[in-house]
Structures are given as C-alpha cells and as structure tokens.
Image 1 (tube, rainbow, N blue to C red):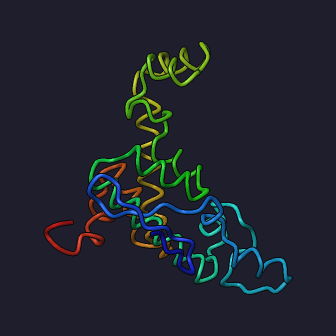
Image 2: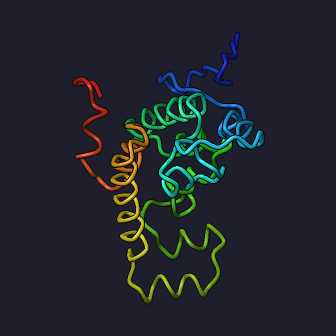
Length: 187
C-alpha cells in the first residue's frame, strides 16, 4: 500500500534501502510557482523557477518546496553513499529533475570516466570524440569534478542545504562538505 503525503512522496523499497520515488511534478516548485504568479515580491524568495535561481539570486524557494527538495536530496545522498549512481539518477528523473541526474552522471551514465566507447554508446558524433581526444582523455572529466567542487562550496556558503552540498561534494571528494552530513559511524 502506498500512502501519499503532502510532499508527493511515495515510499519504495529499493534493493535493501528505503528511498523514495517521486511523482514527475514533485521536483517542480509548485508553491513558489503559485507565489510568483500572484505577483507578490519578497527579496528572500527567488523570482525565477530555473534550477540556478537560488544561487544566482541569493534567495530561496518557499519553505515547502525547499523541504521537498531536501527530502529528495537526502534520498539521492543515501543512494550515492551506497554506490548506486544509476538509481540516484533515476530517482532525480522520477522527480522531474532530469537536470540534476545529468549533473550527477555527466557522461550519459555509461562511465564515470569519458572514453571513446562511452561517447559512441551515448550517441556523440565524431567532432565531440575528436575534441575529447585532442584535449586529452579525462580533460572533460576533470572540468566536471572542478564544477562539482565549486558547486558544493557555493551551495554550502549560501546555505543551500547540507544534502545538496554533500551530493556534489561526493562527486569530487570534497570532505569538508561531506562530513557535516555524516552524523554517526554508519553514514
């Protein structure tokens, strides 16, 4: 039996861990969207609904939407901690946040390290393959790791949520931002 709460959260047992699946529209900030449609202005609330808005505008979505995002990110953190990247990406996609899945697995989910085989399987054309080879195998991968590091630092500095900072810190081994989410020896 599945019980839906106020946050469109459907409990799910996935290979031994309790994580959630989310309705496709749950990753979209409905409360903030309704607030903005009313034309009300608040300097602490974002003015746009794109995923970069909180960082760019130095503001936040409404508390209900922020709480829902933190719940999703806590589950993503749980899956990443268990080494289940594909399931974490699927969870993000099920919540309507495909952009977040793409940031977690930048090379199409095939490999964490880009290779010609990964580019071919991911449908990339010869031009992209040549760029990757000319810039040196792994150059794009290092840029992605640097971007994850910068994201984890910026998110933590702007109090964007400990799980979101930890999710990106995990991708680049930024222990400074991972350790605050580790509350006991099991984590």
